[in-house]
Image (cartoon, rainbow, N blue to C red):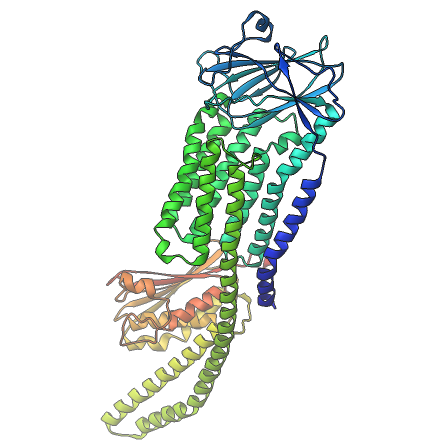
Length: 634
């Protein structure tokens, strides 16, 4: 059922996404009313708006007075001679005087690519960027919006701009707009709604791919793409000054900080996305993330006018991230599949759009190229992710079929091993009994010796068959556990007594060292003794004329049981693989299943098992089990 749902989700989600985004975008486009903007002649340094119909339109004065190379206070402009706009000058002062009827007016405009201060009737109302009048160390700032209320004084509204940090040869003064408060707010709402279209597209996309990731968490590419879409949506809203329109009193430093942090977050998520989709070196997103964190801290803790000096580094870093990722992707072109080619093309467009945007070009005269490039990036990545997710769904379906087949095979294997074990018990018991009987009644030492060997081999074969069956059950999780509070001292003593007969094989001595008290543990008495027996038998097998010591200690939270011998020890290679199935350190002995089973049992008890050994210096195998807290003991 899950796979059927995943397949339908993969097919229907892109169509559903397009329908939702188109509907919302269309409604936003239709929302509000676009008020007409009428250019007004500017003559003799004044725009005469006394006859303008402010109830149905917004006025756009068609000129201004320019004072190049200086920053003049508003009260000194009447004594200065205006000139022409000079993009090469470090500073420019701009004045717009308007004759208007008595009323409350809202003035707004956009300040592109320069720092500025705005005075209305001699009062400072807005500051954009940083103007340093002493050191001429000015900060340029990418397009922002200003708006202020104004009341005429003696029928005149005077707006003065101090402009610095101009980066273009073409005139950068875009002018201003003035209208009645309700009329301007209607227009600004319309502009905000229009700017919200790409924001809604990206945020809706983020929502869809977060859903994809929640439904298929194994595909991390969906998560990184969702985060990219989310952050780009927030970034576009910031770039379009939508938060500024909703919160007109937001401070410039906060706007500045989030604008650049959003860019850094896009870089980090983009690098992880590229890593996930194209398998570029993992060091790339790690380095990008570390450097982004460093830049974010710098932007947050140092003064604003100093932070703004890092903008060239910031811009270079953003483009470096794009270029490095694209170059690394290029190295993998020979292994491209169709989703890789589509994603790669979208990333190229994304990077070029940023270059065009820096050059001041605009798409269709309204959206900047970076917004257009982001939309191209979004849709190309969505197409690429469609193929990625489709392949993942198909692979999951294949894995489901394969797992079902493997489950049936495992069941057959377990049943077969169980049948073999059951069927072999009777003949092995007969062989063992007949061999012992023959040895007991024969007076021939040679025959007695051979019969004893036969009995030992039969017992070894029975042990191997039993271990194989136990391994099959562990692998299939077909084991019943019965955990209950257990006295560790009693369990160890009772178990050790069953092992004394095996010490005669190699003339070893067995010692048990236990403290007077040990906390109880929750253990399965049918399985845990087998671990101790196996460890002792292994110690006996590799120890000659030595000593085997069983110890137990407690630190309050854990009980540690260890079996130490003075035998031949292990090599580092043997220690590395000792708990693996079918691994034997000595090819002449053992099945390679004993320690594997021991680990399975200890892990089922929420414990751990480890080995310490050096060649010729003996071996210590220890396992730890959680103790029952005092308040939980009877």
